[in-house]
Image 1 (cartoon, rainbow, N blue to C red):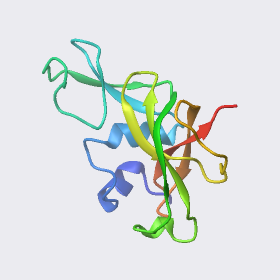
Image 2 (image 1 turned 90 degrees about the vertical axis):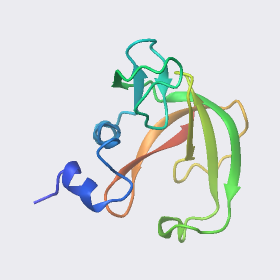
Image 3 (image 1 turned 180 degrees about the vertical axis):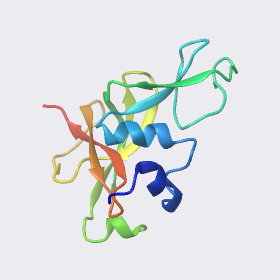
Length: 140
């Protein structure tokens, strides 16, 4: 029997109770972000209080998953086991259309040259333990 995401969360340090809705959305192929119910500001990373107005009424909502490359770089040395054998990686800091910046990488196989300002869209890849993680593919 395949473990549920909640069961996986207990065994995976990447997933905790505060971020579980993010990973549940990722299982559906959707990028979810927190949004303040008072001022409608999108939040990332996971917060317990709005960084704009201080309100604690925070909800998870589906995001567009689209944005522009704000910054980028190349990872050539492996610091994590999941990077073994897949280097170099194109790292990207994406400014999502919702206004938050999201650190990730380009999708596997997307070896095109990335430039600041390039439009990108989220796709999901799985870690060795099955955890879905958002990465980005250039929109052409």
